[in-house]
Structures are given as structure tokens and as C-alpha cells.
Amino acid sequence: MDIASKIMLVASILMMGYNVSEFLASYQSLSEKVGEMKELVRENGAGELAMRRSNFLLSFLLSAIYVVLTWFSGLAVWITVLTGAKLFFTLSISDYALVQILRSGVFPKKIYMLSKVDAFLNALLGLSIALFLVL
Image (cartoon, rainbow, N blue to C red):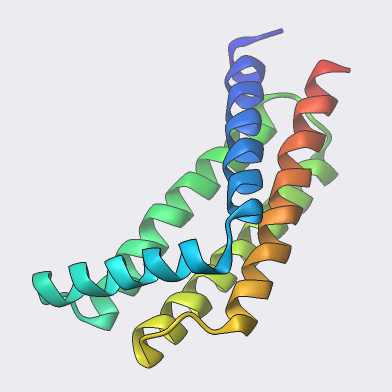
């Protein structure tokens, strides 16, 4: 197993673990996190555009690294394309959720359910890629 595959295996396990924890998080705990984020935004005076830009850049960078690792790990091209498409979907949901939260000030149930589905799919993606690498 080459170095890219080893890094990809670790990244997939971390991705799976993080998304499982997000999937299992309660509405109350996520609402508290949203409240803390709103307080930090207010204290720092960051605008909606600055928040969206930093969220997009960080999420895009992590997603791009993950997709590149998928490519260099020697997995099939269709797996790399599927991973890129799924992470683009996640990036879109993340931006949509951030806009809704910043504009309304609350964590809507619709966004909560959408984030649960996305976290579940991301956990499955991480598990699948880890299994592809090991098997």
C-alpha cells in the first residue's frame, strides 16, 4: 500500500467518524452550536459574505484534498467522480444551511434533517472508500 492509500485510509476513517458523530448529534446540541456561532459572528462583526467565503474556502479545500487523495490512491475513476460529486453536494448544503442560519438566526428543522441525511451519506462514503482500499 503506497503512502497516498495510507493517508486516504486515515482520512476516510476520520471522515466517517466525524459524520457519524454529526449524524448522532441531537437537535438541541446543534442548536446550541448555532447559538455559539451567532455569538462569535456578532462579537467579531463578520458579515454574511465573509462567513460564507471562509466556510466555502475551508470546505472546498478539504473536499479537494480528499478527491485528489482518491485519485492518487489508485481507485477507479468512477469512485473519484462520485466522491467529487458527493462532496460538491455537501458543499452546497453547507452553504445553504449557513445562509439560512445567518438570515433567520435559528436552526430550522428542515436544515437539521438535510444535515442528518448528508452526514449519513458522507459516513457511508468514508466507510465505502476505506473498504475499497482495504479489500
